[in-house]
Structure formats: structure tokens, C-alpha cells
Image (cartoon, rainbow, N blue to C red; front, side, top):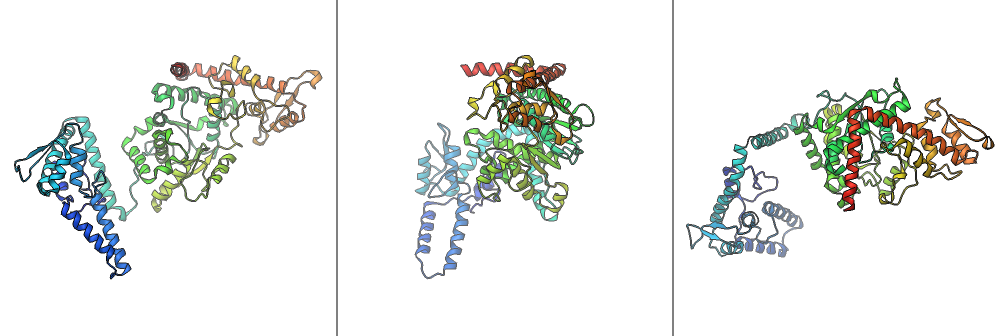
Length: 573
């Protein structure tokens, strides 16, 4: 019987019983040399025949293709004979060094031990070994190979439990397929709402992957994403510790990853208090913080099934987007985990980072130029032109897998926004570098910077071209950290000290006033930098003090600095 790729008997699996192996190999296609030559002649006759109609020829071609697919379904390599039994003997049984294969033949009915596969194949082609003898010998060899695995699953309690879960999943999958016409397919996912881990209809934000030196930019971006939704919506901040590990962030060091998130959370709360106070305007008081690993362990089976299902749905190119092969499999797995994380939270909205290298999997996007334009504008994204691969994967998965009316009701596609230049500041101290390798510690402020040292020294070296307001880091920093935002209704003000000959002290209540004076030359770069230095020392001091007060964050800060020193030493070797 020829074997089909859709047939569950089309391959041998590690968990197969003796009966499974017997049935599969006994029914497997096993052509002899005469069978192969006969089929070749039939194909030649078909191609030479001119009496048949074109439609009949096409029909035969399709039938031949189907037959070929069946014959090749168990093949591990190309073979003109297309005999999967020989294929298994060569690549499974006799692949180890010094492996042998015992099979009955015409000269030795009790069984001959072969040392080389070529001799097995030659005896079979010469008719010394019959198909039944070849299959019997393979069945015995496979069962001998699989028996230690069976014993392990039968006697080891951990392996036994895992095996039972796999078998249970197979039965569930079969039941779900059988019931598919009666209702919506079952959605395998981690349900954090049902687990009372997150509130329903939330706004989901995912923390950035950890680095040894968390930056003020990361903190400001995170706060901006948390405030990008309806103010009344409950917010969920997910700390992606397992995604960090698969991406090899911080060398996949568990302690370092945990340390990063402790420091990040402390700095985020400090920045929130600095900008919004502790009252009703506070953002973090309405945020549920979720550690990804702890959430997954609530129901790991359904979570990883949802990751696997996402992987089955998308092509590798779609998940990779614009990344290079050298970036590794970690990023691919991380993106599939993002889809599973979204399913787990089932949010009303999501805020993501835009991806500068996004090449969308969606066919709706005509060309890459539109992606680049969308990313450079950093605009609100609720269209087919997503600014990140993650957004495209989420939308396409919801549209393809959750399209049943009942699913649409229970799992509405979340609104996706991307970080916008109008909602998050650019806190860079220097113009963009050509590459990451050209960056220095003076390019931006870090959460763990020494307030008295770096607060002033970094601002002293910051780019500040007289009259240039297109890129002026001191203006951006002062406007953000002093809350000079008239459009948001803030009434805060900042006073810049100047000598009498330079016009004396001047007070600003908006970024626009500050920009006008700097552009005209009324505000000198030196006076501006001095004012910003004072503000930055104050912000960094608050963060430093709060980190020290927070036990976990204090330990985390020390752990990150130790990790950074360790990696620096390894780099020198």
C-alpha cells in the first residue's frame, strides 16, 4: 500500500508500540527493481501516446503526482527506486558506525548479518531478499532500537507523565477535529483573565528585552506606551523574562534578567511620580505587573501549544521579517511567544515598539518603501501598514485562526498602536551614530548613572548647536523632565539663570517658548545646558534613592553592574 503524507502511519515515531511498527512497515510501499522499471516504461508510454485527449493526460499526471507523493512520504533521501524500507535501513538502522543489519535471504534463510548497506540493497535488487523478508528484518531492527525508549517512558515517572500528556493532547486534537463542524474550534491558550492574573479588556504593554545598562529612554518609552490607551482602561505590563532567555539577552543569565526588571520597575515608578505625582494622574497605580515566566507556569501546556500553533500557521519568512539569519532562532521563537502572550492576556489594545527593519508578512502591503515611511513617521498604527512584524503576526493570526463568529465575540482583534514621536521624547544626547559600535556612554543617560558625576558631565558634552531646534537634546530633556507641555494642560515652569548682560533670569512654561528663544539666539547654549544639568541631577538622584530604598532593585543594580564588568572582562580576552 502506498503511503500518504496525510496518513498517520506515514512514519515511525519514538513512541510507537511494537504493533504500530509492525503495521506501518508491513503496509509500507516496497518496490523491487522490476516494479521501478515497469513504472518507468509506463510513464514513457504515457508521454509518447498521442491518441489520448489533453484532459485525460492532465488527469493521469495528477494521479502520478499523488502516487509519487505517497511513495516519497517516508523517504529520507532521493532515490530512483523510491523504496522507503531501504531508506530506513540505510539512514536509521545502519547509520551509526559499525552498525549491522540481519536479514533472511535465499542463501541463508535463518538470517545473514550485513556490514554494509550497499550489499543489502544489491541482494534485494538481485532478488535474493524478498520484500517480506526485508520488511520483517526492519521491523525487528526498529523494535530493538525503540525498546530502550519504551522502557524509559514506562519506568521513569517524569517521562511517563510527559508521555501521557502528549498522548492526551493527541486525543484532544483528534476530538477537536471531529467536532469542528459542530462549533468553533477549541482555542488552545493560556487564559490569564480566568486565572485572575490580569483584568479583562486591558491595555497590554511588553517591557523591552533586558540590557546590562537600562536607559532613561527605555523608561520614558515604557511610560509612554502605558499612557497611549484610554486612561480608564486597566493596564498590564508584562516583563518578558523567558522571551529574554530565548533571545539570549544578558547572556540568558536568569539573575541578571531579574535584576534588570527590578531596576526598570523602580525607575518607571520614580519617573511616573516625577511627572505625574502620586495622585489621580499617577499611571502606575492602575498597572498590573506580570512576570512572563510566572504567568506561563499557571498553564504551561496550553501556553506552549499556542506558541506551536502560531509557528505552524506562519511561514519562517513571515516571522523573520527583515532579520538576518545570523540573528538566530531566538528572535523567531520570541515573536511566536508574543502571539501567545497576547492570546493569554486577550487585551483590548496593545502598544508595541516600531521595528526599523520591519518587512511585513502581510500581502496587503505593496512594498518595503511604505514600511519605511510608516516607521519613520512613528504614527498611530491601526491600518494594514503595521510598523512592526509583531503587529502583523498578531493581526493575521486573529484573522485566520479566530474568525469564527464565536471567536470574534470572545477574542476581538486588539487595537495596536506603535510608539509615536508625539507621545515619547527623544532623549538622545548625540546625533544618530552610523552603527551601535560607534556609540559611547555619553550618547544617552542611564538609569544607574551617578547623579553628581554623569548628570552634569553628559550634558556638558551633549550636542547643542546654537539656533538648531531640529535636533537639540537639551531642549527635549528640559521639556520632558520639567513637564513643559502646554498642550497637556500642565502649568509647571522652569527658570533659567542668566547674567544681567545676557538678559537676566527667564522663566518658561512651554517647549515652544523655549524653542523660539533658542532659535533666535536669545537663549545661549551654555545657559540652557546649565539649567538642564540641574534637572537631570535631580531626576537621577530621585531614581538612585528609590532604587536603594527598594530592596530588590538595590540588589538588582549591584547585580547588573557586576554582570557588566564580567562581560567587559570576557570581551577583552
